Structure formats: structure tokens, C-alpha cells
Length: 354
Ligand SMILES: [Zn+2]
Image (cartoon, rainbow, N blue to C red; front, side, top):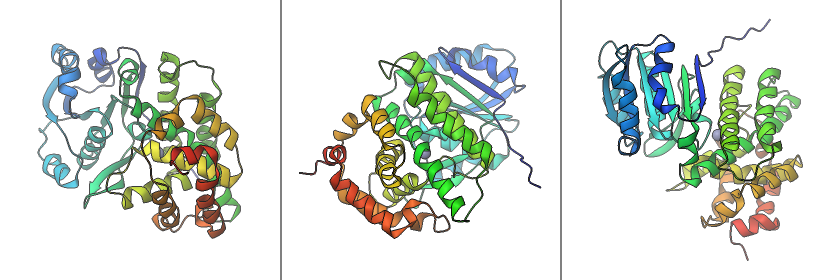
């Protein structure tokens, strides 16, 4: 008999002006002494709001605040074991880098991590995984699910567009990821966790089906954050990343390894999702519509992406996780994926293929 032992966030606050009330949510969860890690530029942008909230509350003690501008393992090791004693929780405020650093430092110290993203380029703010630089390459490592997630949607809305498009690319990937997971089960390679599968499907369906006129609308931003959070929870329930990460993620991880300056995670993943949805012959119209309507394709067309990089990444993808059996692990589907890059109209425009 199988049982689940999962950790889910105790604090979950998503809405407007949440940053101003940071202290209240932390105190409510019974935490009194914190050490904070701020991402690059966060002190200048939001320092006043953050420190007013954290310093003016007499019940809360801010033991230290650090600015972190890198996510290398060397940096983390230098910081992790010199945080003030008595720290009850690590609060990370910023984009992906700062959150990954804070999450991993909390994990090494075995204390709760409170995730306060200022951009949501992927589901990392709500998942146990971290993306760190090890030997100068972006590498995925496992830590623990955040104890708290506090998202100020006003800040997300005003973050650079590329981060919103990256979040859109990461959420649409559940379409191909769950199909890959089912495919693996059919091959007898794994067993699908039904609840994790359901949550992963719902996370993308709710945003892909909702009406909106602008991706910066409050309702769309809130939905994006909620959906990415659900994706993180689905992985926690499954005990692995399969519900949220299939062949499209392996292609992106391969690009991370191969290219000197990879694009944002969700940008690479979104493009790879479109390619693989055509290969899987599954819901590709929905993927195309969502990525067209949101402006994702128009945005990525400006990035001057290289089709050959994607071809090589498709070939390299199975080696990232050799024990899985997704569509990209099958030679015939890899050939089809490489052809799609040159045959599909939208991809021709994305890669500027003439
Ligand atoms: Zn992802």
C-alpha cells in the first residue's frame, strides 16, 4: 500500500500589495526571527516597503539582510553556515536566483524557507527544486518545498515582460509533460500518480481556457501565479518532477548545458512544448493558440534564437534523464521533432528560417 508524505506551504498569499504586509503573514505562521536574502536591485526597488514592514513590527526580529547577486554553489557555501544563530526562517525576496539561493541555504540549515517572488518566470518559487550554478553551468538540485509563498501581484505585473512570457511558457509545458508521463506509464517505466496528474492538468487548463484581453490584467497574473503554484504542488505530491516536466524540459535542460547564454527557462520550455505537442499529436492547437494569443510567439521572435541549437538539444535531451522514457527518448520522435522546427510556419518565424 502506498501513502503520501508531502509538505505543502503553510503560508499561501497571492494578491495585490502583499509586500506591505509581509510581517503579518510571517508572524501569523509563528515565526519571529528571520534572515532575509534579497535579489539584485530589490533593495533599491522595494527596500523601503520591505524594511518598513519587517522593522516596524515589534513581534518580528530581522536578524540579517543580505544582497545576493549570484547563485553559484561557492557563494551559497560561503553564506549558508554563517547566518545568525536563532534564525527561525530564511526569507528570499527577488527573482529566481535569490529564491534559489535562499531556498538552498534554508535547506542546508534545515529551517523553513519563505518564498517572496518579484517575478514568476517559472514554477521554482513554489517547488522544492533549485537551479544553481555548479561548475559554471545551470544545474537542477533538490531542496525542500517552501514553507511560505507570498506573492504581490502588483509587483509581478510590473516586472519585465520577458519574465511573464517565461512563466507562460513554463505553465503551458504541463500539456506535454503529463502526456509524456502517461506515455511512460504505458511503457511500464513508471506509475502515474493520479492526483498529481489531475492537479498538473488543471493548472494549465484553467489559465489556457480563461478569457482575458491583456496578460497584464490582475486576473491573468493571479491565475498565472496560482497555476505555477499548483504545478509546484503537483511535483511535491508525485515525489518527482514528472507531472511538471517532460521532454520539453529535457530539451531546455540540454540547451542550458550546451549554450553559453541560455534563455530564460520558460522561454526555452515554451518553444520546446510547442514542438513536442506537434510530435505527440496532442493538443497542439491549444498550445499554439495560447502561445499566439498571449503574445509569447511574437516576443520570442525578437530573441534571434538558433534552430541548430534546438536540433542539438533534441538529440542531447534523453541523456539528461536516461532512465525516463518520454517522447524525446524515442529516436523516431526525435527525428520528427527536428523536422518540425523547419516545417512549422510559426517555428520558421521564431527561428528566422527562410
Ligand atoms: Zn519548468
